[in-house]
Image (cartoon, rainbow, N blue to C red; front, side, top):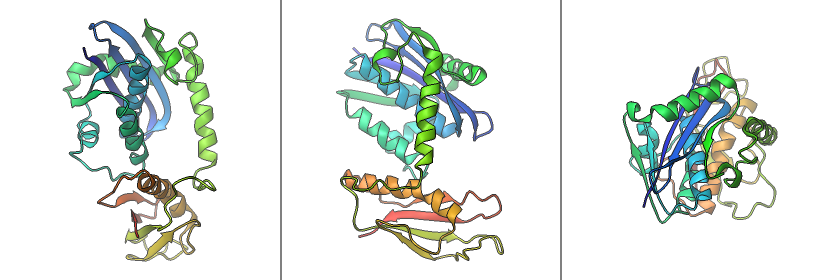
Length: 270
């Protein structure tokens, strides 16, 4: 029999304070789990993916083999099912993690449903945003305590604090390629300026069509803010190549400087 998860995610401000809601029924149709996860500052799409990842971890803790995930995000459903390609540097690592988790199930389905069929997950996500913490509504099988969510179900309020701490540690390392990481691509990742910065904004003087090659070191001639923005995508493309995942189209990202407007494409080159 199939386990069913309803998931939702949202951000107030996009990006802004965000939450993800997860409600799970077991293979007998019993509602066994419900939680809202506070995510900090995220976009709507990042929050939707966070809901999917949390749901998959809980389903795995319940030893589910056959799962159905229902979401009102058409983008997420189409990306997971291969209808849409994932070009966003922020979403691609989340997409890869989701695909990895899905391989742990015998059968799975991720389906788009109307918003009115997903109201409880939406409510849980909003409760998490309102309270600025993870809210555990129900956990009849103690799944949270075995779902790699860091803390047992008895202490849901502390769950986000530990996740936030881990996120801060990760943020402090952002842009640094781990030394000696197994499976690193040696051919390099090419970053192309597809839209030049606005005139007079970029001190590095990047021009449309200019190309930068990331290998084991970062290239010269790219401004610090642009380099930080593309680094997450560079590492995601590299890790995908190391895992044997081929990206037919380039990933895209923007320089975070509010007045810049530069856009970059990132792809692996041989």
